[in-house]
Image 1 (cartoon, helix red, strand yellow):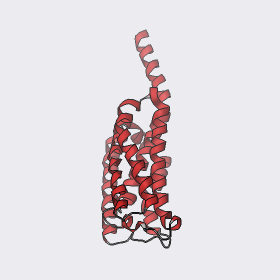
Image 2 (cartoon, rainbow, N blue to C red):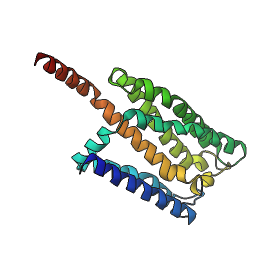
Image 3 (cartoon, one colour):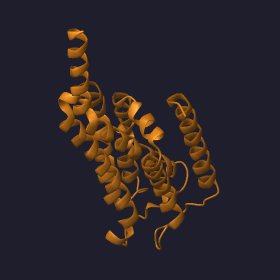
Image 4 (tube, rainbow, N blue to C red):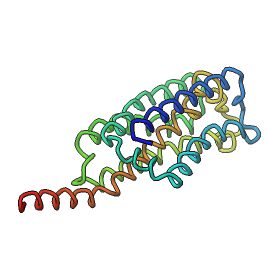
Length: 212
């Protein structure tokens, strides 16, 4: 398959994934008060990441496709996370638990606010370490948000349960947006790890062309 074909296939899968999570949310498949393990909720968030990892490991063509994506654009997509301030607002109104809202809210605000700078200034071989560090922080923010959502009732048994995260419209965040953004972080880091070799290759090509 060509990169264009992979692009169409991936776009179709993402669209189908969104429709599935939207439909399942509308049917209250993911609804939980976290008084017991929320298995459907957890599977919805983990399955796309597992599928991506297996597909990447098994298919060279798919790895080439993800490697051809623009790291700057992938990073710029993360800027929408600035709307994480909504978690803080919902906490203020008693809809989301404090431990989740403060972590996810401020973490998303930081990542969303700095994403444009990282996309425009750090997405290149000269700033490889800083770029990878930022991507790692973005992944950590998502992991902590999910962890605090799942354990909020254990941390504060008498506090607010994160039930709102398991029904529409907020359910689309942990079941669709979070795994998708996590995957974009993985792709970006994978590209950055290859940047030094790519840079040396370009230098070699220029030197060869001048010699000829």
